[in-house]
Image 1 (cartoon, rainbow, N blue to C red):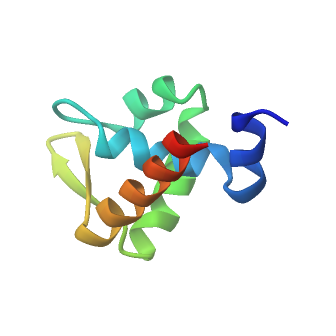
Image 2 (spheres, one colour):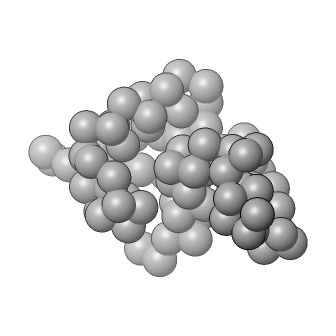
Amino acid sequence: MNNKEIFNVFFREKPAMMLVNLKNAKGTMYASSLAKQIDCTYSHVVKILQEMEKEGLINFEKQGRLKLLTLTKKGSEIAEHIDSIKINL
């Protein structure tokens, strides 16, 4: 089993990568750009982001018609842990 496979045993790949990508983002991040980065449909990304928002991991900030994504302190800490686990596999 390679590192990616073992990582996916413990974590659902797409939601985990969404948090990590938000943590490592340079500049503003939107659901559409996040969907492209993790190779996922926009609707699936939005559904997961809504669950993350309910759990206090991310914030949506409306900017006109767009919603800017930001990690909360809790979301940032979890993303940091996921990223370090991924790096150490």
